[in-house]
Image 1: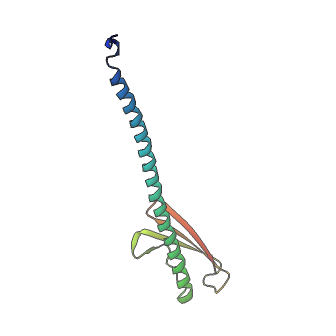
Image 2: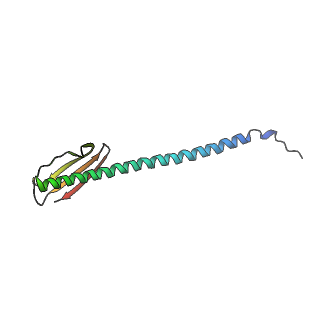
Length: 119
């Protein structure tokens, strides 16, 4: 018996196109996941920097309270304008106790963290 292959011409091209479409779909989904994860990682790093800037603002306020009671707010860290903090004092101007300092740290323009210390 002889098989008739006349009606099966081009079937392998369709099969290859379907397999390539599936592989392309899977690879695009994986690349989308990787790009989203890398953006989230970058944002997390900016948030950590903003937290440390807010901490630096609190340290500057506590140092000013101990030494001269003169606050420089807003300020920046090491003269870099990407790292800025703003100190808010609640209570009297320069007390020993009963005051709270709030420091908002900013890194560039998109990351902000606020820290509060009661003195």
